[in-house]
Image (cartoon, rainbow, N blue to C red; front, side):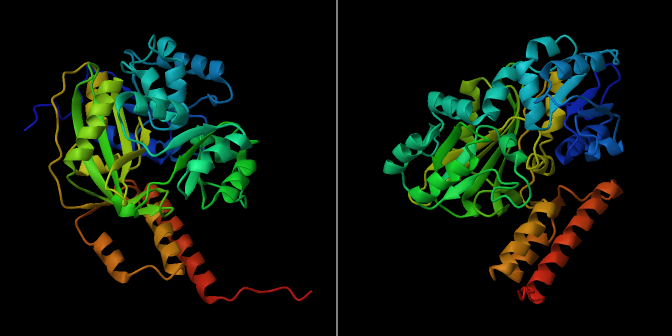
Length: 414
């Protein structure tokens, strides 16, 4: 049994979550139940963290648009606290900003020992470079800046292939109705389609990652969740298998469950140790159905949606990370709960509706998913507004699906 502290002590610092989206709210909720005085910061005051259910919320400049202004506002914020607050990122935007200003931020915050590396792990080009350097297997990958680059890659590629922006935030500018609105990748079945997609996004993303698709179903996807302390020692981990994703094949996990995969755990742990990881990191990987080999898809060195599942697996990664930032010596915590499913309702309801519309949804899949024991990311009875928003969204998705399925489309007459 771990001898790690279970509750906050008054001499320890407060915590600030950089990001007020749902990922940040779940991080706040988790630390608040441990007694930690926690708050959040974001450049978007409409995010749910500003409902102030678990702590104060502070508005800041957008670091992507005003990097210097963001740094000034953060240093001013740090002066409100008697001790350096522990600063924990919950979105890529703030993860990158913390990495870019690590030295300056260290004057006012406890930010961990390898903020720069965390920033490298979050960017596609530097992530794949680190993977190549430290022996983490990845699918055939390249960087393209021109149509000629795309065609050269396509000559030897096994299709389908995909295009990814160097940072997922680059494609947030696409408006509703755009073919890649809210998408993180563009998938092509042949060279012609690949070139067409490159032309579609090159104005927004002049440099792109191009990659062969890892063959296999969503259930071949694994997620390694972990936390490493300031000395690089692993202090917590969990392994999950994805059961359903949104969108299918290339999306994030909507339903996952704990699993044991010694090879995947070892490969991920060795990579992060060699790279010098400190703090939180999630690695998504997949077994290629053609030969059974493991290949990394991406890494998220911050609080994440799937990271919430580790808490129900007996490994409270956010608490362990806070303890380390607070200067405590932390003992390794291993997973100990093996029979539950972790569901992100706001993702799964969309995934199920899309499968239903295609005639692929089976009632047995639904009942197995929601049969207890089950843990929810975005439903919590202690947070009514958070839960009501999830339920409202779910009802909206279901109603829209029923309407499209049974109400015939009206066609113009002229």
